[in-house]
Image (cartoon, rainbow over all chains, first blue to last red; front, side):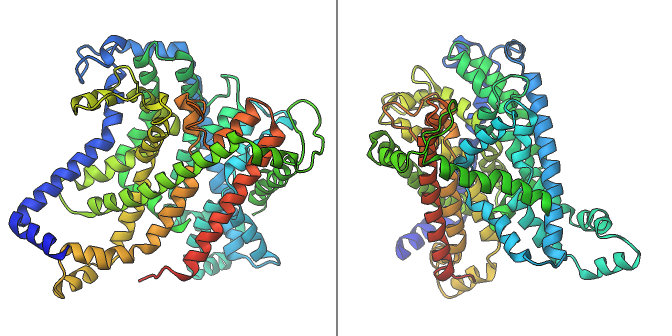
Length: 283
Length: 278
């Protein structure tokens, strides 16, 4: 291994190796982007040219989007998803910040046990909870409601853990100063602790919003009417109903669903990646 | 603190107890559940469909996890290497992670179209015979593994990238000063130092693969052909929400919970002793 690596290195030279590695890097990038590029171009083609025509469409069929938009209420789906994801994110940040505050800045009996209880939820896979949670919302009469899509996800053990770590690192002097200035604990939390920890709050927000926006199985089960369906369920349903009769129309619908996320991702790519890396390392 | 704990109690701990209770009953969605003891578990362990689903799930989980570790590490190295395409490759590899499972499923369902789809076009271009992909019991699970990798390996890669960035350059340089080639320094210095990341990626991937059954909802295989894509999660979904056998599906859920709890315990045991931080 030693001699072969060294030998190849000498024969080809450093510059050639670097160029080969650049080529490989570019190829790998293409490989991962290809399905998305195919989606974006296919959404403008016709059924007859999708598989046989050139990669770049000869004519750009915008009507695929119009027809997809008209055959299923995608506007409503998008609004539902936007509402559900925004409210879920807001609630997760709020409940996580309050719990993290209690677990990092207060002292009370049973604190450690309750913290472990909160973290313990990380060990419970969501698929195991599918049936009983469905029965719970059904008994509350909440099947087909925004409540069903939001409330079960309004608290996050990961969020509590992430913010507690951040709050523990915030200097005690800030709290002392706020106390001297007459701030109540809740004023300290909302006016000082949350703003100074904006990076952690925003990482939690983006990850929560993304996982809520992309959620599929629970919304699939908890809704059966278009008024409450999220965009992911709407897309899955549209794909299943349309079959293979007009694939470009389905691709247009898919593009409508992924474009907002990919646009935001393209603008804030570095930040997305860092948030995900940190969450993995800390969670 | 209270709101969070209230939600955990109502939607995490209470349902955990309730699914355990339901697994001992003949619950469906209509009549009130009747106690049946261990009947659901007995039926489950004798049911060839369940045993097939278990084998499919374990094979799927091990394949995806193993490949996410190996490819994730390779991609991590590639993304860490300075060059003109470094930004591009980082953005590209992670992009499918932000794409939803539903969208990924739809895109790949049509990419893998057996009559004239682009993937078969590629096979033809390479001089290989076309495949029926998701419609052939021999290749259906491989297709789902391929889709899961495209969608998920970016997260492993990014975790490895973060790990690589956390290793001081001096260690690699010191090994080279001592006469190691760059490859040897990677093999004997860098990769061992990545052990904690490897453990993390392994278990994040492993637990994640058990949730990937959402793909099956979109890929229209309905767990087939002949059960070849019947992941346990989908098996639970099918029994509970298509056949309304809530009691039986609850028993399978409890089994899945115990399986994942066991894997979590193994992870804890390994990380306790064996992995060294720098």
